Image (cartoon, rainbow, N blue to C red; front, side, top):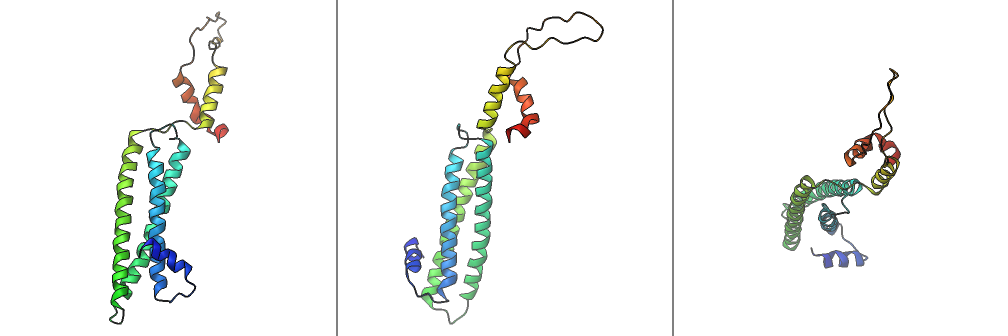
Length: 183
């Protein structure tokens, strides 16, 4: 069943009960293909300036959605192929269902290919800080841009002037503690 067949099926007003399971499988395959294309666009952005923690969450959520679609469509396809074992089923329906199984397998292979690419890129690149984190980092940098305040001594010794400036790693050490302000 091609995408044109799905469109024709949606356009027709009369549907038989035997084509409904096939239509459900075809719709599931279409949703998988559409979601894999969106997943591919998200994977292509990994390692770029758009690669933020929020982007990684979208990537994860899209992956989980595809896995659920695969699970649902697989169950529908399995029941469809089991019903084709009946000797009263027409040969054309068996051929149509076999094509759906091939289309499903092709969609799965494409998803696996993109998923391997995603795993490679996710392990190779760390996400950029989000816009909020960047703003917070700039705020911290402006607050701590001068010399650090001199230490206070409880023994009455005179404090010495500290001329050390805070380093970027100094700011980044504060980020985990400031997550409550970022979110």
